[in-house]
Amino acid sequence: MLGKAKFLLPLWKIKKTISGKMPRGRIAKRQNGCQGVVLRNNRSSMKPKITLDFVWKTIKEYFLMFFGMMLYSFGWIGCILPANGVGGGAAGLSLVLCTALENIGIQIQIGTMVFLINAVLLIIVGWNFGIKTIYCVLVISVGMNFWQDVLPEGNFLGIDNLLAIVMGGILAGAGIALCFSQGGSTGGTDIVAMIINKYRTISYGKILIYSDFVIIASSLLVDKGISTVIYGYVMTAVVGYTVDMIMAGSQQSSQVLIVTHDYEKMADAIAQNIHRGVTLIESQGWYSKEHSKIVMVVCRKSETAMILKFVKTIDPDAFMTVGSVMGVYGKGFQAINKV
Image 1: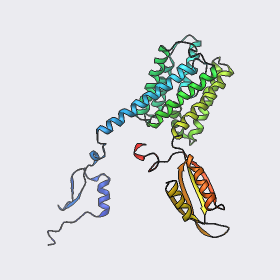
Image 2 (image 1 turned 180 degrees about the horizontal axis):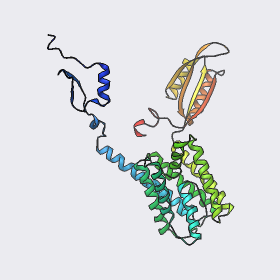
Image 3 (image 1 turned 180 degrees about the vertical axis):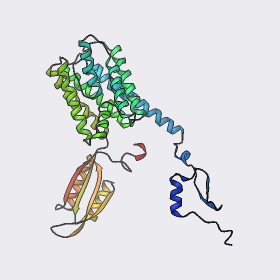
Image 4 (image 1 turned 60 degrees about the horizontal axis):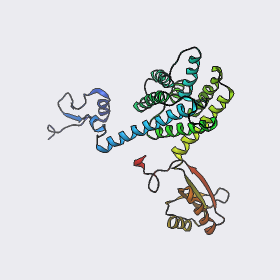
């Protein structure tokens, strides 16, 4: 019986084998001929299955990114440029550089300059931003050159410069939000932030703000007036607000925390009338030392007033806080599998 027994490798040898001592996909055998641990190459199981839904989702993502970047390009070429405006990011820097080169007699289209700037940044960072970023950069570059060739020169919209700047910021922000929602990136200062964070730990938001501030202010060096700088800061604010509203506005909800002794009655009233899930959290008042439960509800902002009405009716002495939640995913809200 002992001669026929098969011995398994000890745990430390299994770890040693897994770390690279044994070829993948083969049976590891000890020198005495006993069978050991079987390791299989499971790389193929990690690959995503190419299904019709997967193909359709990919096509949809790239189409939305294309539409968003064309919208972004039109906002710049059709609205901001004719209004003598400027902005941040690679597009704003390209506009400043193109103006500087134009002053010495060199003509380069803005889209071409955007491509050159992003190409240099991507080479520095090592092309780690993914295919979607490269795709978006290419669409921006081609789109800007396309709109610059097709659209008439000057303020063809016939509106006030400030209104044109606001409109351009809204269009550019909507395009960026579409790109972000599909996992893309417009490059530019995003790549700059990644490069800086390689060497120093600085807040991503601070890098974007500082870089945009410097780019817009640098337009003064190429004979742009103070009004151009002001337009640039207005445009940057409009873009940021538009991106936030589109990205988080539709998912904005409220998280309500209610401290009350009538937590059971409060939870029943919310669940039965507003049809929202309720979570009870164990709590203790530090001053009173009394144990109780906090009623937590996540709901739409429009439903917050209804909850406040129930709190007034059931327990006027309750303590209630309402906080904004930027994104809520799950049953009753946006489905996680559709994010």
